[in-house]
Image 1: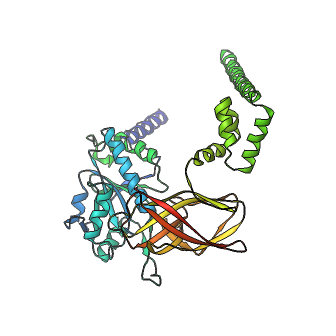
Image 2: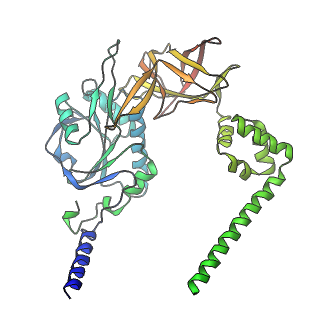
Length: 209
Length: 208
């Protein structure tokens, strides 16, 4: 009898764990879900309009965030173009309302407010670009565990920045929820973002986030 | 007992379908004359574009046999429609394009495919429209950091090399003028070795 009770208890317990919240955590095909989502701390950056951007600006919607720099000729434009296509695709399916794209520069010395605005507007006028002082950008990248390294200047004074190609997903509570690692595939990202978990429907249990 | 019977029936069904499909392929291949078949086989082994290949596809409609052997020949037949920007007896440069410069940036990338029958080294790139032109390779370290590594001399071996987004690319640094979609960028490059020299070709600027 005691053994039966134990088994029953275990089953119920497992059932509880599986059914946490209205939206079960999906298995992402385009990256890794962080469980639990990582709480972020206050930060200060500036957006492409010169306005302050901080933690509360990340609330209210899912943010697809990518770190790059303007003079990166390959990975950065390719990824921003991919994000633009993902947005168009999800818009067509009515699944973009609670989502946004944020581009953060890893080269704030060169990528000033004046430069990041036309750069990000080129891809989509709704995309947000962030810059700031070197310390501000480094602090923000650090709490997202995204390293970047300014490489040595060449004889012409030019330099590149080594950075991660990952796309981060920050949830509407401004917590880091998932990391999508390169190489990025449009169809996989769209597939994941179409799941109920990202739909913005009301959660029954807040512990799901 | 019932389950076992069902299983055997399922296996038999799969085997029958398999044989039927194989039979269909055999029927298709017999439609090609022996001459066409040998040309198809030759094209596949040489990995070159062959107009006869397109003819085979159109006339007999026997795409399946070629597709079965290798997908590459069909892709290369399609690429034959993209203009070749440069060709000499040793090499051909195709599918060449420059990414449009995004407002705010003064650097962009160029991509192209080189096909060659010989091994050679390529370097010393320049362009009248840019301050510097370099060949770069993307690499990722153990921390997930992507960085670009400059390649001074790029080895090109037969059948060739493909510069494309995410991989090796030509970096055009410091644009001297505004470039719009449809404009052309001129690139000069040096080929090292006995049959070396400088070659020059134009690439169209394409909006991203």
